[in-house]
Image (cartoon, rainbow, N blue to C red; front, side):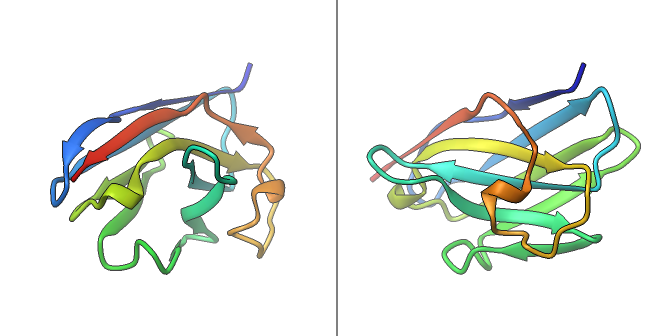
Length: 121
């Protein structure tokens, strides 16, 4: 049974940091990434490791870092200099087949349950 379990969300003041983790089990994934969804908005791409390379949304470049520990089948998202607009539910995503569309949510076939990140101003 495939499972993606996120952890590390919480409440933080603007300018603070959080580190999200996503532990995958059940199989090995080709690519893994993070998406987020703010209240009343559509789910949006945050970051991914595709083909071994990191990719970021423009809104988080220079502040967020994605990394992966293949031995633990875990992906991390280090979030620094957080802003209130980073608030939302963060979802871990993974896929088992190659796709160059790292920002396309439909290209990922497994999802975690989400973890809430709230940044206060």
